[in-house]
Structure formats: structure tokens, C-alpha cells
Amino acid sequence: MQKLIILVSNNSLDAMYHALTLALSAKALGWGVKVFVTSQAVALFIKNSKRKFSMPFLARLFLIFQMKRLKITNADKMLEEALKEGIEFYVDEVGLKIIGASKEDLIDGVKLSGSITFLTEAKEADVVISL
Image (tube, rainbow, N blue to C red):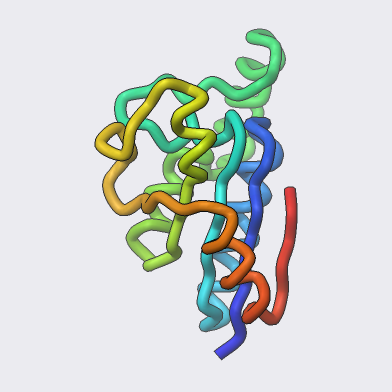
């Protein structure tokens, strides 16, 4: 089985959307997929957060409108689907501490990791992508 590792290192909607698109596509091809999230992007995996992306309000509003108009699945629904499909998500422990959150604050199914876990997985992967 092919193995894809994705590293998301910024909290932009574009990066997260592309990571989810690649992860779901690879899973559809039968690949094993693991997504590692670092830095401020870990905030996207906190329960009951507004999941604010680094984008001005009007730009974010326009993007949401465009995605609805074009019937493009939003990132939250894609994340739910990815978790249901068995795509593994790992958030960086240091990033979690930086935003003042703990393991208990993570959405269900998301795991805690560090750089050693990422490097070990990346070494064994067929494809590694950083966004």
C-alpha cells in the first residue's frame, strides 16, 4: 500500500483545504494517509472553536459564498469525512501548548504527536507533502 504524509504548517484555509483534498483523494486510491498539523494550524482541531483561518473577514465571507454557489464541499465537512474514512490526523504538542490548549481540547479522533513521530512516518512514506 502506498503511504502519503501531509504536513500542514500554516493556518490558512487554502492549505487546509488542499491538504484535505489530497488526503481524501489518496484514501480513495487505497493509500494510507496521515496528516500532521503544526504551529497555529492546530487551532483548527480544537473542539467548539470557530476555526478562524488567517484571512480577512470579507475575503473569508466571499470564499464561503463562492464555495456554496459552486457546490464545493467546505473544509469542516471534508474534515469530518476524512476522519470517518480513517485518515489519521496528528497535531503538534508544542503548537497545542502555544495556543493554550490541551489534549482534551482536541476534536475526537485527532492524536497528539511530536517531531519524532512525524520524521519516523515521513521516512517510511512514499510521498511527503508540506503545505
